[in-house]
Image (cartoon, rainbow, N blue to C red):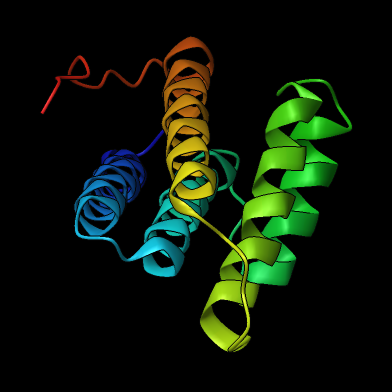
Amino acid sequence: MEPKTKDLIIIQIEKSNEKLKAAQVLLREGFVDDAISRAYYSMFHAASAVLFAEGITVESHSALKTMFGLHFVKTGKIDKKYGRSLNRLKDERENGDYDIFTSFDFKDAGDDIKEAERFLEEMKKYLFQQHGIRFPQKTKN
């Protein structure tokens, strides 16, 4: 893998970490829909990193969902539960961002953030196992 490609993958994972931290802050401040949105974007950037590691770039959220499913879930490289999580949070993010009547609560957002944390850790594990890319250990806030 070219050094530039590796750098871009690392930047995507850093962005994923940043969005996850933002989700935690937003939830702490009571912004449930926005916390869910940031949790989804954490997953979006982590999924983008693994796609990029395989030489795949996407131009939309829908394309990311499709390509992640085709290249990682259907092939068994990534457990299908992570594909389901990505799809569900994408839908929840859209509902929270665009629907004025949402029914998400603090628990929903907290569960989504935990799911995004697991997703990110799984993508980092994949990147290490398949491409030898190391990331700093997860630290508690």
